[in-house]
Length: 187
Length: 125
Image (tube, rainbow over all chains, first blue to last red; front, top):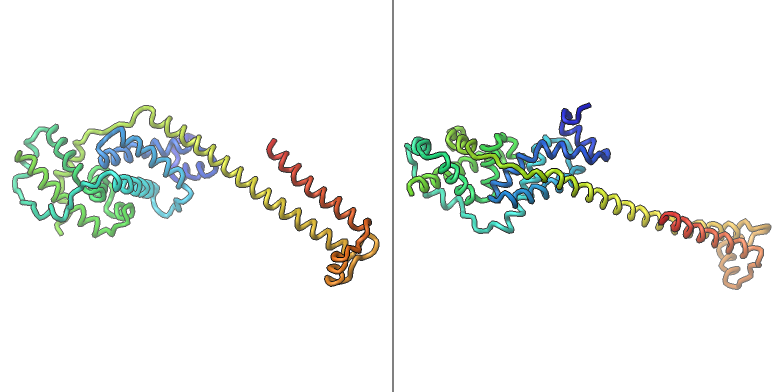
């Protein structure tokens, strides 16, 4: 049978039976998603690649703890999430409090129009800069939702936040990103 | 709370973000580390198994030796040494046992110890 056609669970069973090479198929399936999330979290590709390696090592070592009661993608995101949070707790202490900043938001009615008129490179640069200021949890939630199209329900399973809490975080973070983008657009 | 679907602009912004690629060596480097990790774990498991075998080997030998001593004491080579614990303790304390009983016990005990060390030696090879 072609190994690339197997499901995540089938690969996991093979790994548990001692077929180490089956792990490479899971790596191929999830490496881009994990890496793009980690790049957003740390903002540096070389550092992100090292962290992604560590996350996959952690995943391999913890495979016996995967109880198959949730999707493997949810579980692997959770492992990555925990790893990144503990990593960022040590290295990213300068993050602002979203609760304080959110009060500064001024609604701008023609925001989307102004955004469309800006050059694409500028938009990319602004978003990168804004995301770099976000606290780890908010950054994780917003990236999963907007970049990876993960559902609110799944994000709540990954982060162990309630669904309503995830929705509140998404709402507040989106508002904060909007206000920060506006500041940059005015400069 | 406003509904979270009013966010097309943010979805568009995220979709504009350029994809970042992992280096070509990522996969091979990771799998090399996994193979090393697996070898280390196998070695650790083997060391732990060897320790357990040794512990159970010693325990088994001691229990066998005690069992043999008691069997000789109560059933004897050709006549019992003692018919009760009290009598047995008395035999040991006064060293009334003769060579016919002590010699086979000593030989069997030495064979058990020899067997233990022989097994340890064979495992190392």
